[in-house]
Each structure stands twice: as C-alpha cells, then as structure tokens.
Amino acid sequence: MDRFRASANSFLSQFEPLTLLLSPLLSLLIAWILHSFFHVVRDKGLKPTLLGFFINSIKLVPGVKSYIAAEKQKDQLQGLELEPRARIASVLPLVVNQLQSGSISKRDGWRSELPRAGLGVGVLDNMKDEKRKDVSWQGKCSGTVYIAGSEAEGHFSLINEACSMFAHTNPLHMDVFQSVVRFESEVVSMTAALLGGKEKASGGQVCGNMTSGGTESILLAVKSSRDFMKAKKGITRPEMIIPESAHSAYDKAAQYFNIKLWRIPVNKEFIADVGAIRRRINRNTILIVGSAPGFPHGIIDPIEELGELAFSSEICFHVDLCLGGFVLPFARKLGYPIPPFDFSVKGVTSISADVHKYGLAPKGTSIVLYRNHDIRKLNAQKASCILNLGSLLFSMKQGVTEWSGGLYVSPTIAGSRPGGLIAGAWAAMMSLGFEGYSENTREIMEVSKRIQKGIKDISELFIVGRPDMTIVAFGSNVIDIFEVNDILSSKGWHLNALQRPNRHIKAAIRMFYTAKFGIEKECIHICVTLQHVPVVEDFLKDLRDAVQTVKQNPGPISGGLAPIYGAAGKMPDRVMVQELLVDFMDTSC
Image (cartoon, rainbow, N blue to C red; front, side, top):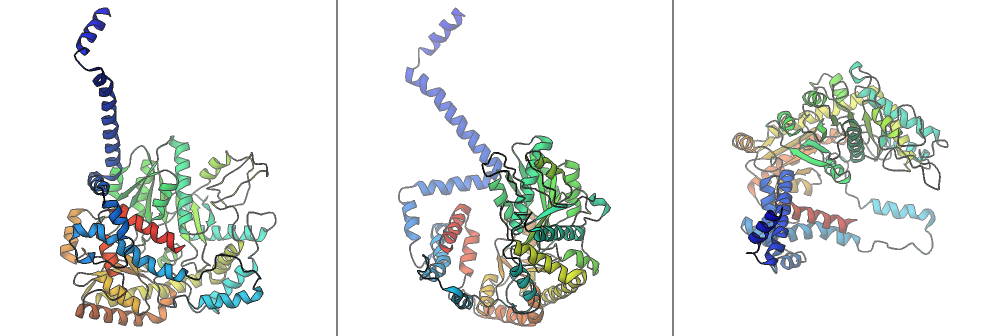
C-alpha cells in the first residue's frame, strides 16, 4: 500500500493542484451532459434533438431573443415572402397577432366586477343579446353540434327540459339525489351493452363512469392503466404508445401523470402501424391505444391486431370511441363493413365514448368503460369506505381518510358533478332508443357517402384514405386547400384544418403517396352530423365554387387563416408553435 501511495503521489506531482481538483469535476460535467443528451435523443429522436439544440442556440445569441419579443408586438408581417430560414423567426408574430386580434377586441367592455344592483330576471334579456353574437352554426359546422333541428323544439327541447329539471342535483350527494345516481348507472350499463359488454368474450364485468367529456375519459383510462400496471408489474417509469393520429388528450395525460409518450407513424392507409408499435414495446410499457375512428381522417385502427398485441404483451389497451361509440354499433347492424372495435375484441381493457356527440346528449357528457373490476378493487384497497354503486367503477377513486371534514371519496377527477347533465344524457338515450339511433346513423352515413362522392367528382381534390364513418378528410395537389377553407369560411362553413397530416408517415411511404396522390400538401375535414342532412347539396356547391375561385385567383383572402396554417405547419421549431398557442389561449380566456 505504501508503494502504491508513493507511486501515485509521484505520478500526480507533475500536475497542478487546481487541475487535479477540476479534472474530475469536468469529467462529471461532461458525463452528465452526455447522459442528458442521450436521454433526450432517446425520448425525441436524433433529428428533433439536434434541431431543437440549433434553434435554442440561435435564441441565445445576443439580440435575437429581444428581436423575437419585439416582433410579437408588430401588427403586420411581411415575412411570408421570405426564404424558409428567415421565416422561422418572423412567422410567430403573424400567427399571434392574427389569432389574438379578434379575442382582444372582443374583450373590450367585458365586465370585470359584479353589478352594484342585481339585474333580476332582466339578466335573461342580456344573455339573449349575447347569444345573438354567436356564429350561425346551424348546419354549417364540422361536428360541434350533433343534434338536428333548432334549439326550441324536438330533441333539443327534450334534453333542455331534462337538464333544467335536475339542474340542482349533484351525484356526490348520493344519499340525497338517488335519481341521478340511478341515471348514471343506467347510462353506463346501456353504453356498455352497446360496446360489447354483453358479449361472452367481454367477460361480463364491463363497468365505468360518466365524465365531463372525451378528454377526461381518456385521462381516467390512462391513469387507471398506469396504476394497474404498477400494481401488476411494478412499473415505476411508465410509457404508453399511441399512433400519430390519436387524440391530443393523450399528450395531456402523459404530462399530468408523468408517463413517457411515444407517437408512432401511421402506415400508408393512415391507420396504426401494429409492427412499429410492437417494436416500441418494452418492460416499461403500460398502454397502447387505438381509435375507432381517428379524429383526423375518420379511419378505424386495426383494433383486433392491437388487441392481440396487448394481450400477448400483458399490457393495457385503450380504444377511443369518443366519435364512434354511438355510430359504429348501429352502422354494423345496418350492414356497413365495420371491423371489430369494442370489448368483443380480446385485449381491449378500456373504452371511451362521448354521449354528447352522436349520443345526442347535452355537452359535458362522456363515458369511460373498463373490461372488469380489477382496477376498482385495486383502488378500493386505498380507501377506508367502499361505496357499492352497481356498475360504477371508481377508476380515479380518491379515498381521503385523514380529513377533518370526514371520510371522502369521489369517482372521477371532479368532486361535485352536474346531475342535470347526467339526467340529460339518460333522457337522450331513453327517448331515442336503438331504433332512433339506427335511423340517425343511417342518415349521417348516407350523407357521408354523398359528400365523399361529391369530393371525388371534383378533379382538383382527393380524399385522404378510406373513411370508415362520418369524417371525410380531403386535400388538393394543385391548389392550396387552406385557401379553399377560407373561401368556405367566408360563406359561413366551419371545417377543421388538419395540421401536417402526412408529417408522421415514413419517408418511403410519403414519397409513394406524394407521387400517387399528391399528399404532400395539407388537408381539411368535415365531421358529418344530423345538422348536415338537409344542407349537403349546399355544401358541395359551395365547395365546388370555392375550388374554382382559388384555382382562378390563387392567393390568401383578406383576413383568411391560410397563410398562418401553411407557415405554422412548416415551422421546424415546434416549441415556438406551442408558445403561440399558449399566448393565444392566455388572451382568449
């Protein structure tokens, strides 16, 4: 030992003491930087990591950050005519100003304090005045309003009365408002029966809860899957895998519940690539996802194949039926070629379905369903009081035992919930019945086919993929489809612009599709509802006229959003796009 110490001291004596002190610290710093770099590369990929590093480095150059901040305050932007590299820094002010200008001006004069004297029933007149300022949505919105007719009659009137009758109720107080507790249980049970809950393959234990919407349903399904897989496999660094076409609610769930999210490219048919998902599964995977149909293109993912993959991998599998839940069961009965999508598929562990879309219930009503009670039993172990509500699954049950206010437990993210909405959903389902939903499905599926045929007859347009339901996405390889969308908007139509619909497609597939179909440009879609049944020919006429207008006079119209969507979709710095969305929301609410 003495010889070793003497030898080491002799060797180290040739170095400066400061060098001996800083060298290990520098080595640790380099190791930490490399570890962080490879961790980011693992999460985001090499190209996005390098691009993000490059753009962030540019922002660190003195004056660049202040320049971008100053540009945000400008009213107009000439940067759309710049080269793409110059456009990166200059497009943000245009997007922010264009989106914010309307909301800022509308907020002028908004009340910020209580009136000194109450308005009494006169407040209703004020509300009617404000309602007149809403956009005329009747028949001209993609999705948005799914009930047919006017607000003062028919199904609208029925659910409005049902909501009003139970507006004061809250299922949190289940001993007081037993009516809405029953309504919720029956809505869940009826929905489960529609979605394979009665099939032998389902196991006969399907259960769930009502939620405030599709996003909350997805959040609950993701959290329950995370907790279940932690108990089952001890996974503490959870990951979930979704197709690029899956809803953005999964991004929110990943952020809320600290789950690593993998977005996987779709295949040439714009559906989930099962092989790519299989290759991404690892020991930390808790959940894979499929949609029936997906929001962007209205195409059903291969649910059976994904179910087999989930079952063999012993992980959870969620199916997003927020759009298809109250259409696909009836379309299948009507003879449409609908592939398996529900609990009849082995491997499906949870489903979300919106009652407030094609279920024609009041806004703020959705369902989350689970194949069995395993998650409920898991959560029940943490609670000091177990509440038996028949088929209700406390997927997010939070049992609080040490609160001075007493024992507390609630089934979803919310504590108090509007019983009026639950009653409205029950009334909608009971009033329509199976035959009513079947007739509605027949009408909207026929309208969807008519729109698809009408689009195919317009030589300048193409349909993206093969729509399975009531969402029809289309684009053009000869004109700017966003300019077409602006023309339609000027005529009162409100369609959905799809951001970079082919960004996620692998390079080889993208080249094939671009050569064959011209799908290197952007797309828009229409989500067909009962509101469109009487106006389908009006829509197709306006679409044909808009295409010809853009073809003869290309270029953005005054006040149109085509330049914004086009430029924002091409911006490589997605953090910058995220910032503008946050800025817009901050000024709009």
